[in-house]
Image (cartoon, rainbow, N blue to C red; front, side, top):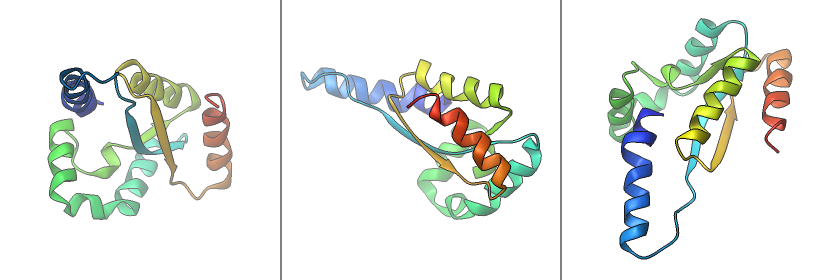
Length: 120
């Protein structure tokens, strides 16, 4: 969210304005899981998305965000916490959210899908 709010979205908007184009859509893709085990989910995300920790562009973004790896970027928590995190993305200008459900727990998948269905 910090990188989007402070760098990505302002840069895209300025480039569009400079080119005389309408404000662009902004797509954000992040791992997501509704869970009561936030620490466990972050650890799982860190493993599932470990490759991103080796890519310079992603590493730069994670440093900007102040997280130590991909697990720190995941949207995780209870239904209310996940709703708040997604609403934050919307409030900073994200127009399209690509939610990457990464949990394999069937109950957590269902809970995550239920929260995401609210935005359909």
